[in-house]
Length: 146
Image (tube, rainbow, N blue to C red):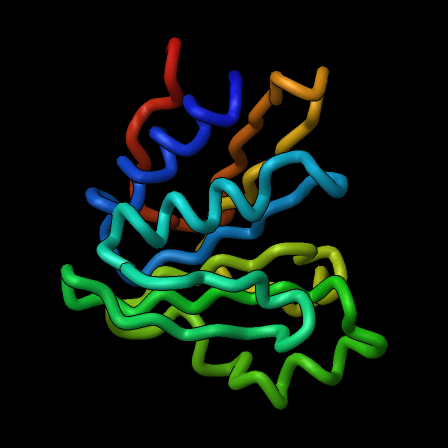
């Protein structure tokens, strides 16, 4: 799928997914993790700038649908223990949509239930997506073309 299709699917997720929900977005640099994260947030009703959380590690956004989007980027973590300072134990509660980029940095303590979304860049224009439900994560809209 191309970036446009990925973003459209993310918008649909943001509009329709039941909360709370956690997404572990997995893939190499440039695979589309941030594109998908922003699309989900936009679909949920986040407006305004959405800078990458790479340097701040975490941003929180209120949405038009009454949910809170929590966007984390764990790439710069030096020790897994650092996640507790980010309010890790509170993730996935109430009306939250939690988007975790580079979840491998905290693999052993990832919250459940969640969706693991694996993104692979096939060419600069196309990506392959694979979904893995962990626990009783809420349903998602179907992937485009399926």
